[in-house]
Length: 94
Image 1 (cartoon, rainbow, N blue to C red):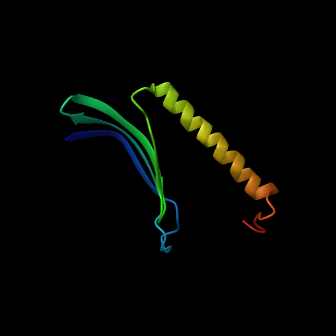
Image 2: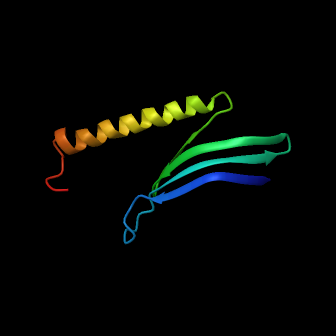
């Protein structure tokens, strides 16, 4: 199986001294299967215990996938703001 990556980003989510293994991978490439070459586009978020992968399905267009990313960005921003400013567990310092 041949892979051609156009974009690959690996980001560690914890400080280097942390024993935890949280990471995020963003990938855009083509994969060659016996049926031919197909796009392989995904975002993968993992920690020590779990992993999720948001994959561009064969029924998605690139615009559909980009819209999913934008929805995730908005949801994460809203959650972050809640945790910082409104949560009863909000940090006392940052």
